[in-house]
Structures are given as structure tokens and as C-alpha cells.
Image 1: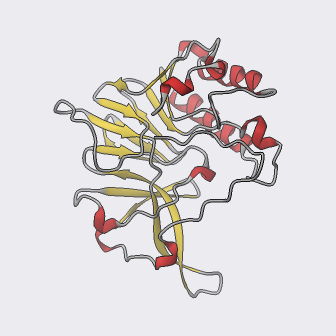
Image 2 (image 1 turned 30 degrees about the horizontal axis):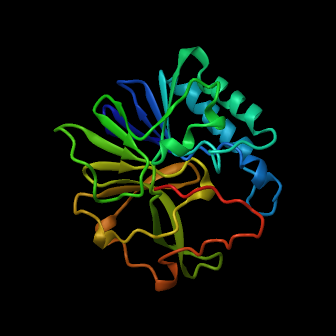
Length: 257
């Protein structure tokens, strides 16, 4: 399912943005595979490797992009490579670069991203990238952005919009549900993560967003507009998600800026 914000900015329910005039597919936090370190802890997160590949391949086959912009790391702890990760990454970039496609990685810390994970791929991480009238970044920003020339808009993959919406439990009683979303603030489009488990930890408060803000929730690969002005405030206990405690001996990747 797709929603067109303009003739050159299309939201795709497969958790991507499509810029048809430059043929650019934009994805935030691809994280294809959990990395060797996380696979040794199979209880940490559900294995979504196959689903991610299917969604990625469907986007490539249908849209046939000339350029792919990856916002954020391609794997946890990208600054190092363990075990069979090198071959996995080689296969990933080989698939992404098929038919001469250009692959760009945009991160908030390119100096840490460039290293063994990108060796031999022809890809160099950068902190910003332009695709026509869009400037791509991966930073933890919602409201404050560097000034751009008129007609240019930011696309940011560093904050993952999460909203709480009224729902019903299985018995029909009132309940709440957290949903990931695309968020447009009027000067920036903020993307959901490509991997479902990397959703944000803080629920967006509509009253704090700009009046011109718009959002589209993602649920079962469907996009639905959220009525932000009339979205009720969620209960206090739903305002944020508790982060899983770190496990002894498990190396966490550096946080995005």
C-alpha cells in the first residue's frame, strides 16, 4: 500500500519511502539479520530474517530503484564483523547493487560505520546525502534541523515514530495499542524502522507536534492516517516502553546520535 505526499515522495507500507524522480528507495535501520553476536542469544528477539529479505526483494523488484539510501547501520555494532557476518554483508550489498544500482549509507556517525563491514562493498558511509529536493539524515531529531535552501526537505531515519491509539481487547473492552508510523512535520519526514523490532521507545505526544504535522500508522502492512488533533492522550503507563536490560557478556552496538 502506498500514500503519495507529492508526485516525488511516496510512503510505502513495506516501511520505506520512494522518491520516483530520482529513482531513490529510502530505508531506515535495515538491520538485515541480527548479526553473529545476537544469533548466539536466540531468546533475545524473534528471527525476522526471512521476512525482511522478502520485503526488501519485493521493493527492489517492483520499484526497480536506481539508488538505495540506507539510513542507519546495516547491522548491530557495524564497526566490527564477527563470524559469518562478512559473507552475509557481501551477499546483501551484492543484491542491493544488482543492475548497477547505487547504494548509499547515511549514519549519524560515519567515522564508526566505515570499517570491516563495508570493506569491498564500494559503499562509504556519509552523514548526509542529497536526492533531488530531499536531504537524507539519520539523527535523533524531530523538531530542530539545519536550515536548507527553499524547496528542500529533510528525510530522517534516526527517530522511529510511535503512537498510542484507542483499541479493544479480545473481549471488546476498551484498550490501547502502540503503532509505528510515518511522521511528516512540515519540514521533515521521519521514517519507521525497516525492522519491526526496532520501534521507538517513546510514544509521540500529538500536542507537542507542529500544527501542520501529519502521521500514518502502520498495521499489517496497511497505512492509515492518524487524526492527530483529536487523538486522545494515552494512559501514563503507555508513554514509554521499558528497554530490555543488558545481558552480561553481550556487546551492544553504539547508540545512534
